[in-house]
Amino acid sequence: MRSVSITAISAAEINADLNTAIATSAPSVLLIGNQAVASLPDSNPQRTAQAFRAQAAVTGWITGLSVYTDTGSTATSLVAGIYSDNNGHLPVDG
Image 1 (cartoon, helix red, strand yellow):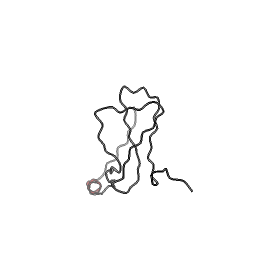
Image 2 (cartoon, rainbow, N blue to C red; image 1 turned 180 degrees about the vertical axis):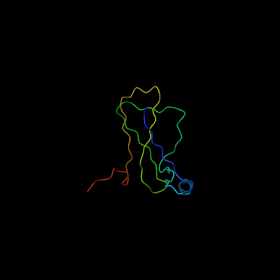
Image 3 (cartoon, one colour; image 1 turned 90 degrees about the horizontal axis):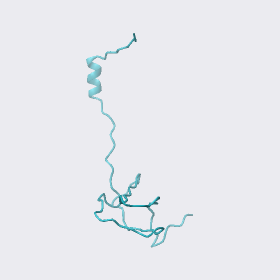
Image 4 (cartoon, rainbow, N blue to C red; image 1 turned 135 degrees about the vertical axis):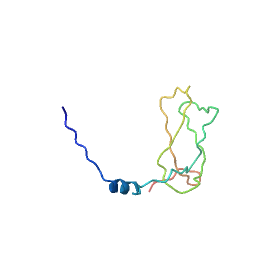
């Protein structure tokens, strides 16, 4: 036989738990692009980059980036990123 310990809490403790606020986070905000998945595939030759111009609607931190590929894709890798524009040129560090 195994010994099991059961601890009971009072009605006051249950009531206090029910009335204790919990922290919530704000829903994520879409900063750039859209959430629509295109109905037609887009393709590029191997080792060819493609860029899309977009401007953030609001200021914020980007914490994720989603990229969708067609089910028929034979690509073995994909590189995606977001960069800023410096009058048509990539920014220079330093």
